[in-house]
Image (cartoon, rainbow, N blue to C red; front, side, top):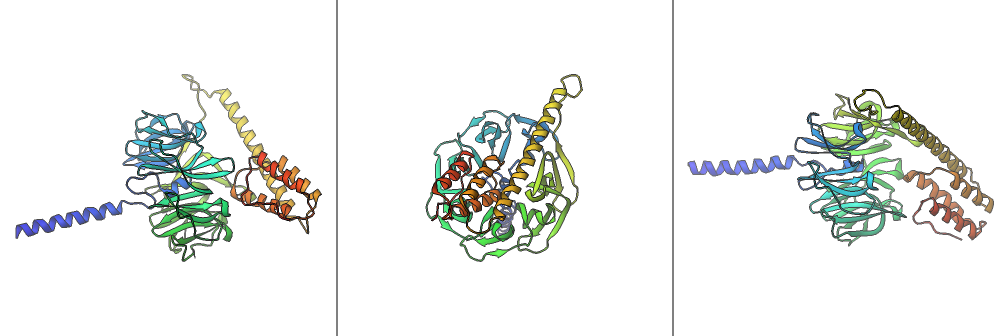
Length: 441
């Protein structure tokens, strides 16, 4: 009888342990993997392992730090500026902003720092023995993988991508070579399959569904099965900075001045979490970390990366976590005047650049919306001159606007081929590569 009780108890203990281990799995993050996919979509500037968090510390020029989850024992790990932080075992993997976004790893105590590649690497995601990343090349970004020791660099797909998610043996990505439709490809590069026909961004995977921002339909959140079936709308909001965690989708609602919201993954129970706008949402346990911001007219939101906030996932306990500080002179306790002057100059230059960008977008919009009928050589010359003097940032909505103008010019029989070629060369010189545009007659 005692033997039976002992066996029963052991079985119960094993099953309970398995259940508890299962419950520790967070969407997008399991044992042997780094940061969550959703955090990586939002720069991945913070990650957690055990009771420590690892983060880009804006209070010290965004260098790599760690501290206890309660804020104690704050320690600088190294002077690098990290994006896409992935903590696994004794190592921290990240894209080093100070070295043109190349991938590095460093021990959690700051020793044995190693550069792993020479590519400009974005959305890096570590799972098992592999690091997956988008390699920025001259005409877009390409999906690559390397071993965690930096060896066996491999291109996964010939298509240009804009964001991706890894699950199992597949990579799911926004295919920039096919107007940002969702594709999936085996990690060995085989079976490249299209899943939908919508312009799709901010891709994440939960269970057997791909969640994404449907740009074609008002930037609302949709989901589609990993088999390409059952495309379903989740909400009616223009949704930015999407982050999925524990049955909830968190996002900045552009339809409501980028205030923070959450909604159940089945589209029910939408809740506003804050009255202030924010962006670049990273979620650690019950807290949402985010940058503050202000509504920026037609350009969306202007984020303030000098101030990091956090708020509980029920909308309570909002607090400022970090503030970028002006350095003080050593031993004097007085503000360094040269630092203030440099900071003011940087702010002034940044403001001028933002104004230039806003005017440029407005002028390009005005040109395209003012088109009536077939374009002429004179129109093409005006568009080329406009591009030459405009400030154009690499953003998908701006590329979409530029693409529309280029397509109108290339499709006009009244415009000389020489001007069409000049337009193409002008864009290339500006570092702008628009996919799938050919001269039509």
